[in-house]
Image (cartoon, rainbow, N blue to C red):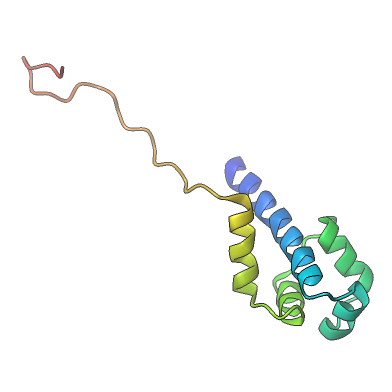
Length: 104
C-alpha cells in the first residue's frame, strides 16, 4: 500500500512540474493563466511549486487554459517519472518436477 502512495505522490509532483513547464512553453504569466482559468494566481503558484495538490477540476481548468488536455498533462507527468509497470509477484522457486526427476 505504501508503494502506491509513494508513486501517487511522485506522479502528483511530476504533474505540478508539467503544469509549470506547459505555462512556460505557452509563454504565459501566472496572472494570464489565472485570468484565463478563473483560478487565483497564488493558488497556481502553490500548485506549480508542489505546495498544494490540485483537484481534478483545477487540473482541468489549468490544462485547458494552457491549451492542452488533462490527459496530455498526465501522460507527460508519467513520462517525467518514467514509471515502471508494477512487477508481478515473485514466482515460487520450489522444484515442481515429478518425483524422482530433478530440474537441472
